[in-house]
Length: 352
Image 1: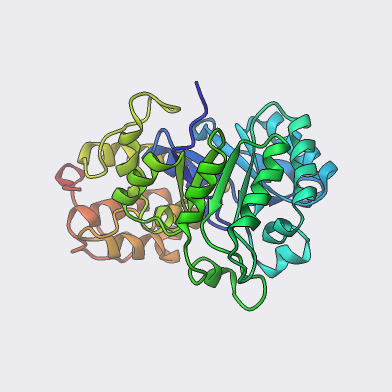
Image 2 (image 1 turned 30 degrees about the vertical axis):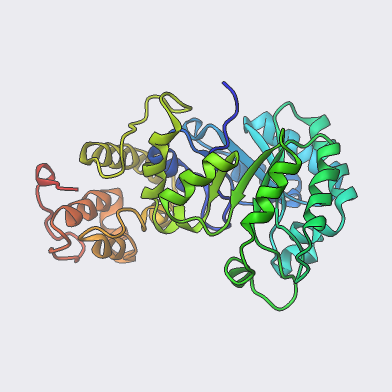
């Protein structure tokens, strides 16, 4: 099956761990999922299994690497491919000071020839696609020529998939959070990249939080990548997935509109079973459920759902069963006692 980047979930540090990705896969069987950025040092000198393990249900799943040394990136990419990842992505967009001190992330955009060497080394090492996630520029220089030349040099090196965060990265004076919000969005520059590199895949990232906007950009470019929207309102993935067509990477997963009660119930049951298995293996429950906190946002009872799944006392006292009680709070519109062990309403009365 041809690789599909129409709907991607962004790599987000401390967010898109394997448990969050498993949940996102249940919501969107055809989405392309990305790991948190993992540095070459963590893989080559740390516990590789802890960073690389994932569930087979996550396919297609991409490993995002952080680094700037071709040899280290090639060795890390080979580890990822051997582990079964479907894509290796190089981070050229993160603006954090910690990443800058490591001389990778967004600051790599100032050294496109080095990035090209890194891409070639990774391509030589693995049989899966090597892709690049980048910004449109550095600091306050908004010349289109900068990003066009950056992409052009990587295109000559063989890269054919570019995920463009449609903002500049301001390396001095803005926090990573501010860098996600304050530099202006320049969607026009991303469209120009597609015109200048028509046979490359150009994926749009940044500022997308409405289903209608995502569908529009899927028509104009080769795909969209959602970050905070998928974190704060995961149902957007379920709303978009049916537009990707029948079949897909997880054909056994339930797939219908986000407000389908039977589908929502099936997702909960699948995640309940997964959480019980992982918790029995020692994974803390608050890690397992944090990707679900924004699920059902905007529906009656969503605040109580979030509060209960964030309550360490309830998590400790009830274990994975707390998911079902939180679900029943939603069914009752949140009109129940949040204390650990309080009785839950009948599952059969679920109106979600």
